[in-house]
Image (tube, rainbow, N blue to C red):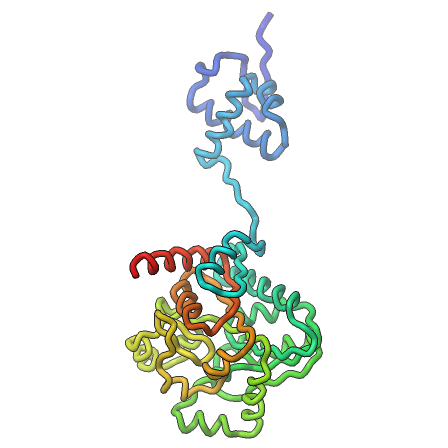
Length: 337
């Protein structure tokens, strides 16, 4: 009686010794077995019976399918909090809270994912009657976009604006959040960086601007972007004249938060530059009860470390790639010290 043969997707296979199967057919079998196992949800016993091989051969075929790149397994963790990584980074940086989320795709995709995580944190933790201070940046823009609902709070702009795209301006950020909270909105209609110290001082003295700056003292929660200067990944860096930013880099700037420049050890530097700016001061930021830094991209790892060392922030929201890079860099720094 002839041996039974089974046809699977055009591939006839007879009951024969495993060792008789040649490499080309082996690869075809691996594709066939993988399709049945991963897509059709068949058991290894079913696959073995239909392909005419042993279940041990099926197990090896499935393993080979992964080794040969026939099967690529992706875990969709975008937006999911990595508790272990969050705890590890929190402990290394000495912060009150760290939220690390999986994020994939291009830079805009990662920013949106991190922004949603920051929005969720705010939604879950802000209380009625608080005053929320908002900085400026693309990730904070994504945060504002992702907020669906908030308790009734006041929203205060913490930095002046630049000539960048209007939908990224701090004015637009506080406006959007104010629509969700229903509370007072205090925009700061002033440039972020003035031509000189005297001009900046004149802006700060204008009554409407001075009124907003005074409200900075009432901020209970501040949300700030993290600007990296080594390598450059900062909108402030992008808008400054080349000679100004090169001077700051030469003086050791690696990060900025608001209008405060930091060196690699987290020390405030270039106070003369801050004097040209209109925004929350370093001392006021340090006195704020809760300061959340929000950042995306592994390129900002050194900036995040500098910011943590500065003592200016209490919480951090980042993507997993940035968290991993910061942990690795922090570990190397500790080993070298």
